[in-house]
Image 1: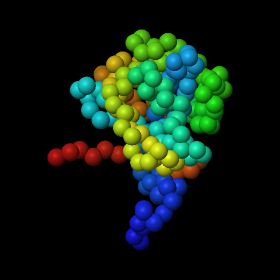
Image 2: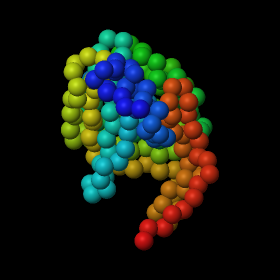
Image 3: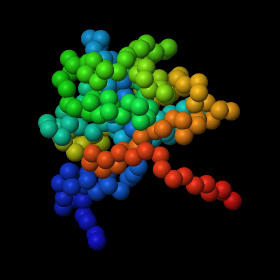
Image 4: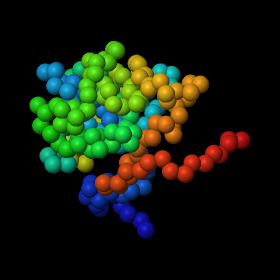
Length: 202
């Protein structure tokens, strides 16, 4: 079947993308506004880019309701800082609580029951309950598409501090079985770690 994305709505294209690009890691982003209000929201268009310097990117799309930029992006543009918290099975329900489109004055830490703790370098807080957090400085923000629902942004950031739970680190590597990460699928579906296999490169 051939499908021309220009002949579909952005919602129809989105459904095809999230049903094909999976499982997706979740960037649980914490930021702080210029007024000192904490913000917390999950994004599943997220990946690493380079390790020298350690660089990541994620994509906050525009709100589907009115096409406006999300509070996470506004805070990153204003402060230049953010934290990526990794989601595992222990906090997945709390993470889901923050996916609602709350007004800017609402603190999602309070809504979800998660704990905000100060970072070492950046102004944005860490999620205490997250087993891994990356303090990040904004490198670049690219606007993609039109300024309406369906468009969005690519945020590129440098990791300036790793926070890793001691029990997860073994000889410089993360024990993924102990981490118990959660991935995003399509719609309301998520996935846990399932059967794993090893393929050695030639």
